Every structure is written in C-alpha cells, then in structure tokens.
Image (cartoon, rainbow, N blue to C red; front, side, top):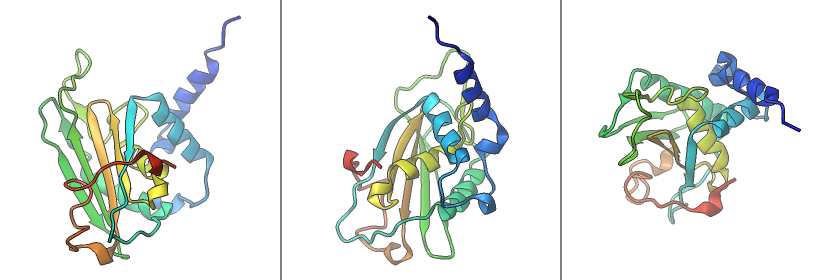
Length: 194
C-alpha cells in the first residue's frame, strides 16, 4: 500500500503561506503556537543542517532571552539584510541590534567554504535563503533549539549559507571575556541543544 502524498503537500503549502513566515512582532506570544510549529516544520523540510549551540563561557553572565524580544530584534536584523545576496567566494556579512534592555543581538552570515549551488542557481538570498524559509526562521530555529545555553546562541547551515546568532546582555558589552562572542573565541557544544 502506498502512502498518500497529501500530508506532505499540505505541509509544504502551509510552509509557503506568507502568514507563517514573518509574523509581526506585536502578534508573537511567548506561548507555543501552531504558527511556530509550522515554522519549525518548514525548516526541517529544507536544507537546514549542522545546528551547533555555543558553549557557555566562564565569567559571562547568562539570562534567558524571551521569544517576543528575540522576534522583534531578529526581524529588524533580517530587514537590514533584505537586499543582500551571496555567491561562491562571498566573504559574509554581520549585523547587530541592541534593544532597550541592553541585550545585543548579533547575526553573522557566511558562505560555507567549497559549497556549490545547484546548477542554474547563481546566488543565494540572505533574506530568503530557501523556499519556505527566511532569515528570521533560521534565527528563530537556532534560538529555539539552543535554549539550554540560556539563549547564548549558535550556528546553523541552510544551503550554502551559515547563520550565526549570538546574544549578550548589556553588562557584558565591552568586557574582555565576552565582547567578541561568538565569532572569534567560542566553540560549540552538543549538550546545549534543547
């Protein structure tokens, strides 16, 4: 007996729905929702792989980052990258935003070395790296699945792009031991996966 392709098709259509890809910040609730489940399933269907969560570092403070704050800041960061496209050999781009609570949200996107695009594809969008997934989706997915390191962040690959997310609180900004997380002196740790 053959399995019906209908559930997979319905899941794909839900993932492509504009309402599931970029919810306005004021409509996001800290409680889990069907929309978030759809976002996570959309990403799991795509080319996302190599999720890595950053280590906690001695001397750095840790506070949980709440979903509504992450949503607001991730959307602003991704909007700033909306017109950026990457191609083989691209060096990468970074953006950061500090909110009113002095949490600094850092996003860095780099090209995976030696990665090639499918034939006929010349570039990959940072804002919409793959059908059914956005820059915001990748940031949210990383945060959601690295919560055991108190929102410190991690990295994830989608297609030929690797997205890095790091969040530090205001008391750490400029501190010798925390100021360059995660891009220079951090490692990753599988135990921090949620």
